[in-house]
Image (tube, rainbow, N blue to C red; front, top):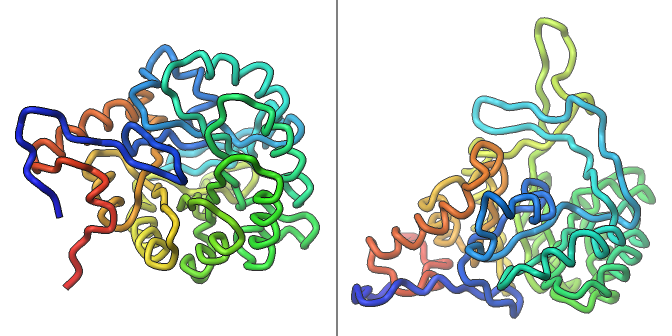
Length: 314
């Protein structure tokens, strides 16, 4: 599986996703890292493999009213509501600063409530110099189909990915919803519709109730569950999806340590995204990069890319 590190040079942490070379497999996840520039004073952004900015829509959105975050015993519920400044403001206000940072791979997360929303947003972002790829959030309700999430219906998923593929002039990563019967099937649909890579999993639909007040803990009632609680399920879904497609898989879901990263790669991920861990430690992403390098040294792994899909199954 690996070759012995000779002790004279550091391990090679480079990985490739959809033709984009990352210096290491650690990517800061969308929605947990702002637009990247907010972390500039606490994290050396150039140490990361990449970062995914907050989900961008064609127009600014205020998001949901509070309370919209709630800490669970092994994770976090969030119903922020995709608050963002809009694609055009991102191009004008945030991207120039990101472009000024050296060797930072910037991925723009895109969402919408109709296929036209995705089309319009991508057309705006196509003019943004310095964006490496788009990540499609397909966990939004399709308002033209009675509110069913794009990522939960094969036909809707095919339509929105095909639309994005037609208008995008950059690699396309599709972020899959875990709230489906077969993640392998949805992964194949995304690939056949033109995805260059897939990322998974997004949050699981969940809720919390205050027994004293008899009210929901989140104003939206339901919310997305992330953090260590979902890791075993996310790991299984990454494994299933990676076996079903021939495009790279980016794994996420409860990753908080170097060992978590290695486990996801062994299960089939070419890279990973770290999200909720940044809430309890804003420096988590950078620390994990260093810990992953140390793990490779200790386990005599010369090239981390060799770990992808290398889990031994008897």
